Image 1 (cartoon, rainbow, N blue to C red):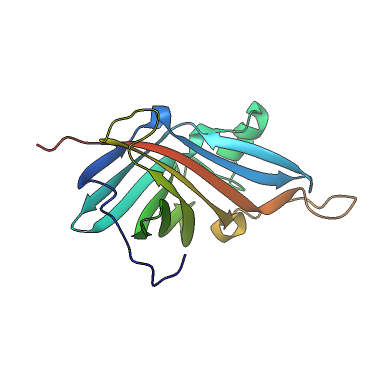
Image 2: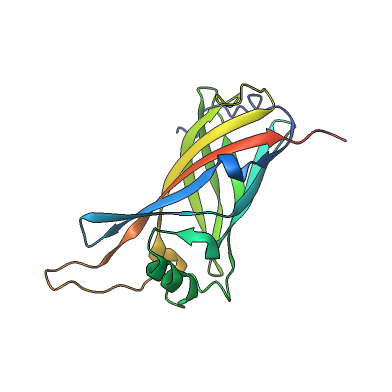
Length: 188
């Protein structure tokens, strides 16, 4: 997205918007065995958007222990191992926006600080925003589809194994895919 594009937040009515976790999803994909993909999600998360005076901000957290890749043994390892999420020491993965741009064409660019395992890195996510949320038909509900990539090594997630055939067991690039439905919190 060009940096000189005008930012437009009037597509989102002023106020606070809470993420509806029952209608939203936080998912990821990672290469496994060089050609396969591991898909997973976090089942527990929370978040909010704040729109006021032409400014938009967002923040939230996922509960690291809620990771679900469809394999109970792998999920337990991801939760408990210091090589991965070590949820006893680092129970949440948090995000706080530093800049959000809505150029008026239905797209959104979100830049912010992602903290995982006590390490904070700036990330950029791109996506689309729909107001009102199509399934709801309510002007006090909106839907965001946001995606991006992070390098897991940037957050100290460096565990890997070399394969006999060459390459590594796990890829470093983690693709993030968020579908967030938010409801405006009534004033007062």
